[in-house]
Length: 150
Image (cartoon, rainbow, N blue to C red; front, side, top):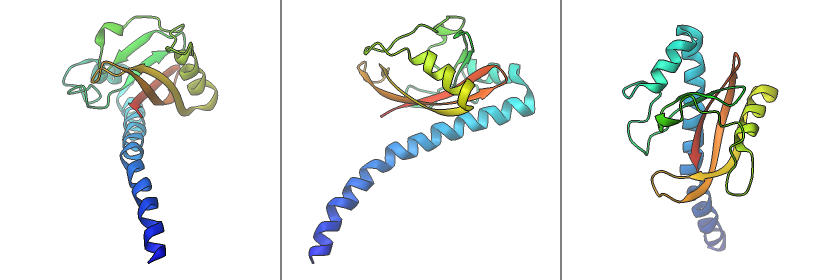
């Protein structure tokens, strides 16, 4: 009986982590799918699929995952949501805590090949600044990523 009483809160805590872990896995899988797509169809095809509204890597609504693609200078080449950012250099973008998140995203892609970067960003669904993490991979001079809110 005591074991059961001890396990219930532990299992409840672990279960609460599953949605976040599932989102992280989906974000990472989307980036890996995009890199494979670019290797099979070319980088320009990846940009098109990310930027066009019905493209494979473009958000269908604010809840969907989407890609972002930046060159190593911080210029947005493609984004599956917030298309007004295409062509904008975001190298010196900071989160509310002053963290140069784009520089860290680019550095992670370039020096590690892939990885996760934590920062804060305005969630378009809530309109509030929230903790976010983005998975990014290096693809021939580009950083290809996907983020989730924690």
